[in-house]
Length: 335
Image (cartoon, rainbow, N blue to C red; front, side, top):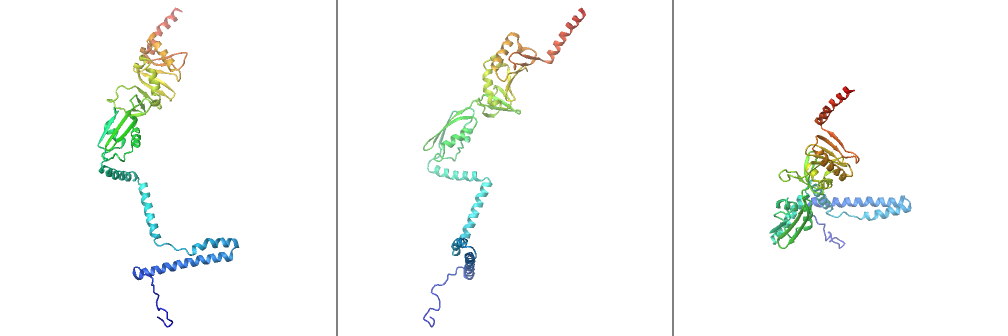
């Protein structure tokens, strides 16, 4: 104690962490905080003295809470950790790694469920004709690691329907380890040619697959932009006329408005934009009466309702000209 009966030193001393350097850092931090609060106090006092009364009071109220504010310890470290976490998330999204990460999480989840006895032990498929078992399972996203517990039946059904061959699908889970999948496939209806490429289409115009000769040898052919969506319309109409149906090699949509029929013997039949059935009736009648489809012609134009225009082939035209020349000479000599 000193002479006045007081302790010469305080009972509590400031804790020094990390030795002299830590203590010095703490003192600098405290001095910086005091300087900041002193500046804010001076600003508040200046605002109260030299501005108008209402403005000064407002500024004083705004700055007063900041005078006693102290930065929490560890705020810098927390901000750094947050910045690193945001950077990792941004890099993952920008790099396209999210599906891979989600896939790994799903694999871990399914592995746990399989260990508990929810492994898919058997899969019963029904309704497949064009698609193989492997193609259906791949479309459904079912692998050897999938578990029945975490299999989303509705999502699996939607993935199956994303396959153009599958019009409808049913997925049924039978615990603890059986799965039933039933599909309704679209049927190959015609071939569609666009820009020189052949595709197999369904009757609703859905493109099913690229053309393979051995799988689809005898499908009718439609050609042109938009022909896939209108194929059922023209092919159904032509099927009512067996004589024409058997003679047609391709139905060509012109400017997405009307059809031309290319016959196997090379004749082009030009159909009108409307009234196609009446035009086909006329064509059948002319073929029965005059064997028009067997004549040496290149074009039969049925676009006008009151007349039929026929274009002869070059050989037929020349033969006709040769046949008319002698008749013209005889007529001139008799005159």
